Length: 563
Image (cartoon, rainbow, N blue to C red):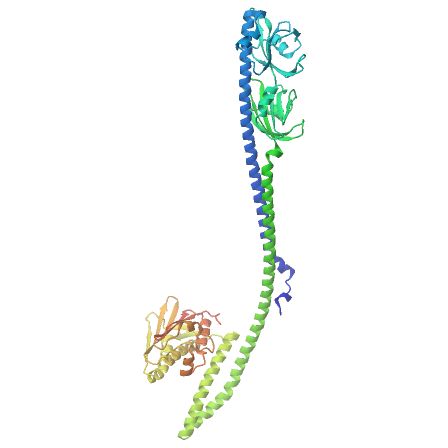
């Protein structure tokens, strides 16, 4: 019956295929888990690198801003000193022209008197202006902090341009308020400096006061001032730590960015550097797509190999079912054959016994020639009976019908009877038949004496039959819990490639031996079967031209259940 015609039950299919499916699912989960983990680790590394780069830029911008403000403050302090000494007679333009003040990044340098009038300036054509309403004037009039004040960006009333005012209070000799020294800076000076750093299309740098008002901001190609960042993560985090990182979607343009910030130690300012999240993670996103493609390919391979494994296992199982059915049929045929042989052996014994009886009668009562013929008939009948008995014994072993009859048997007398019965044929061939029993061999052995005798008789028969000159040695010894029987001869020996076949039924060692020595090939097969039945084994050692040695190992204590 073809293997494909066998149907596997549903529960059996589940039992067979569930491990493959489970392993496949586990592998796919493992692959995707590894990819997700790898992507997460990569993203963390990229974000960490982005934050580090941003923080380094923020530190650089902070240092530049501090140097710029300190340079401006030097000019403010110089003018404060000069005005407190000279008063309105001070000429700022002369100081600039003489190089006492370098105004490379100043819009205007001047003085506001105690009434809020902008009375002095470095710019030609200066006109008096009332700035008493300006915050940078009111702060100093209200309190003498002896500190530089950095104003919010203010829009010039005349110029119409944005500027940041860096101011200090002027005191009269009696310590009362005498006015304000002002250095006006263009906030675009800072944003132009930020332009020199490539932060991508959505990068941003912001200089922000602790009051939340932007002093200067560069976002892409745009310069911005004056935005109120109160309530944003930058202001909240700036109150908690001197530096840090955060991710935030700007309300101004909706772009989500990675930000790093630093809080100035000397001035009430913060600087924040941000890069667009999508731009910064673009390479990582491409790598992640590669990881996912790899995981997809691996998952597909797992599915394909799993399907192939299931198909192969399904086919193998169907073949196994077919082989099992074939084996059952073969075993049934073998059992029927054994039963037939056993039956035929019994049937053959009856006519054989009759032939042997009449042949023996003729041999004993006839003249020479009829007696010779009767002897031939008797010998042939005895040989045929031995063959039938061997076939019957093998059939019983195969059919599991042979039962050992265990009893305590005197070992030495049993062995001596076997040896004595073989001395005549050995002497007829001029062979020495030696027999030795070691001193530690027990006197009695619990065994089936008939089966043990069959084993030894077959081995000694073979040794004498295939030895033309020399000797046959039978030795019995004890090897731990085992009884060891050795039958060695100096016969023709057996070639190495034939030694694996000597215990096969109806198998002769060599074709020439079949011609020279009568034999059915059942003796050694029966030895092997009987030895195994008694819980032992038989081993052959042989070398062509030097002889053979058969070693039988039997347990000293046979168990009753051995059948």
